[in-house]
Length: 266
Ligand SMILES: Cc1cc2nc3c(=O)[nH]c(=O)nc-3n(C[C@H](O)[C@H](O)[C@H](O)COP(=O)(O)OP(=O)(O)OC[C@H]3O[C@@H](n4cnc5c(N)ncnc54)[C@H](O)[C@@H]3O)c2cc1C
Image (cartoon, rainbow, N blue to C red):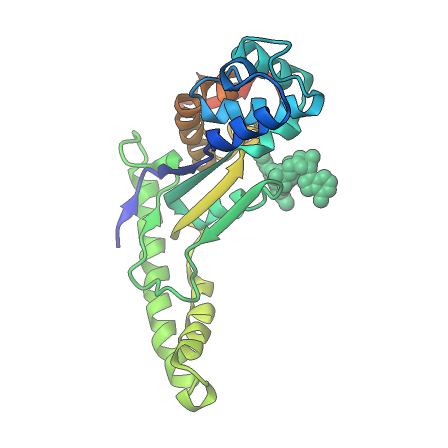
């Protein structure tokens, strides 16, 4: 059993533009070709937003010529729906079931695939230490000791329950071995704590991600999910500065960080 102090967030998928198809569309519509019609250049995320926004008024080759100005105008007017065309996929690991329970409350524009506690054996699971008592925090030794001992007890109870449940759920009651295994694990997981480590694949569009980061990057959010929201934000600010550049990150007196956008809930 390992105790995890830091989550891991990896950006693994993004939206791409098929420039040949876009060029064919512009040609069909008898409007200027890509460089004059689409000002985003090689910034594919901004390009998708520009292409989708310009179709509303068929403004290819007209109007705002600067892509930063174009995107900021959409954000400031709250024209949020065009931001739904760009998606990012993250693999998030080293996080607790407590965090993912909060994460999956974000419904609109999100897709999730999470490690199953029914299919996967949790006998050797790892556990996440809440940031308030993560390694290195001065004076938190006693709290960590209490946490470790509670986790150890839970994991021992899980293992004992698994072996007991195999005795009381006989093989002949199940059509397949996997059904019996699931029945055992789904009952035994009752004693696993919120701190149990999990892994989740999260895909979301830019509008949804902006809302998520605003809600979960705020001071009133739990420290663990706040950390993940800020990790995502830092990745996205690098990846798509025009779409996430209006968020600023600052430090609270307790040492934790928060994020807030200029353009709220577009
Ligand atoms: C600090 C904090 C504390 C919280 N504490 C609790 C708590 O104690 N208990 C609890 O149950 N939850 C709690 N939540 C969760 C919260 O209530 C939301 O479920 C969660 O933040 C997801 O927000 P959302 O619904 O805006 O997001 P999404 O589900 O992603 O929705 C985004 C937006 O789409 C619109 N929308 C989505 N679904 C609908 C719909 N069905 N009908 C109409 N409009 C819709 C809304 O405008 C919504 O804001 C907490 C959240 C935070 C940030």
